[in-house]
Length: 130
View 1: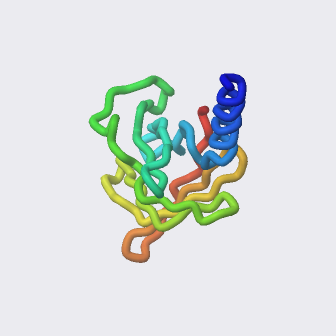
View 2 (view 1 turned 180 degrees about the vertical axis):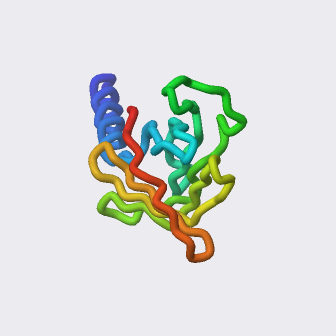
View 3 (view 1 turned 60 degrees about the horizontal axis):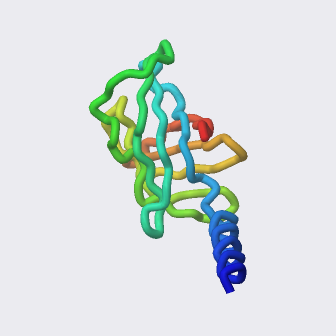
């Protein structure tokens, strides 16, 4: 009986990880206008995707302190299928602005774009850290 339960538990864990959202993980943002970048931890937040700034770096690749550490950078992002995400928001700390955004995943690269009142900005390509 114990081996049946252990096997069932192993199958359940494997099946759950097999269906995990591919965008989950830690991402390095594109450099901002000042040359700084950050690491964003992307995870599921209920039925949507969110991301929090966990580390910040200057233009010399040195980790720096930031008031934005722990701040949610991505929220309400919805999986649209085929590596596309939309209907969410992305906050840009360098501009102190929140954009209606979409993202597109291709392997370990994540293209981020957003708009405010019809003015759109390319958030650059983020690279998967882990």
